[in-house]
Image 1 (cartoon, rainbow, N blue to C red):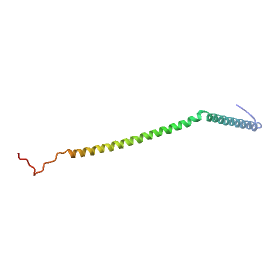
Image 2 (image 1 turned 90 degrees about the vertical axis):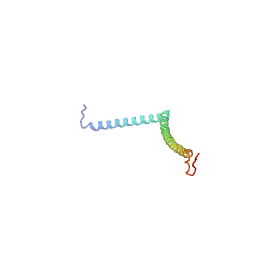
Image 3 (image 1 turned 45 degrees about the horizontal axis):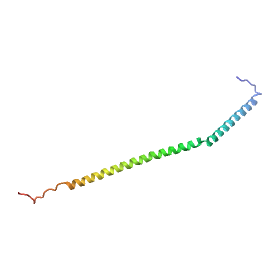
Image 4 (image 1 turned 180 degrees about the vertical axis):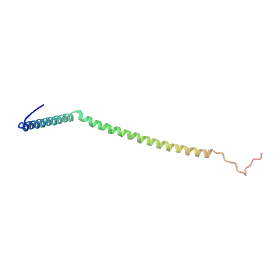
Length: 106
């Protein structure tokens, strides 16, 4: 435990403030130097590449969704076309009913 009298308190507080200020300046300087080193190395490009990969991934997901939607629509349209073609073939292949005036008495 530190014990100091009131006559030394202003001097100690002044020194403490000076040391805290120096520590902060050192930390800011270190941070600045590290950031400039990171920007000068490929690490700066890594974040850019990561963002581009993320955007590409999102584009691929959207393409997949669009492709699935288009496929569903095409399959639905094709099924309707097949059904209408089948209905048309069924009508054409139905045997005609003999009319009442054509009776074969053989």
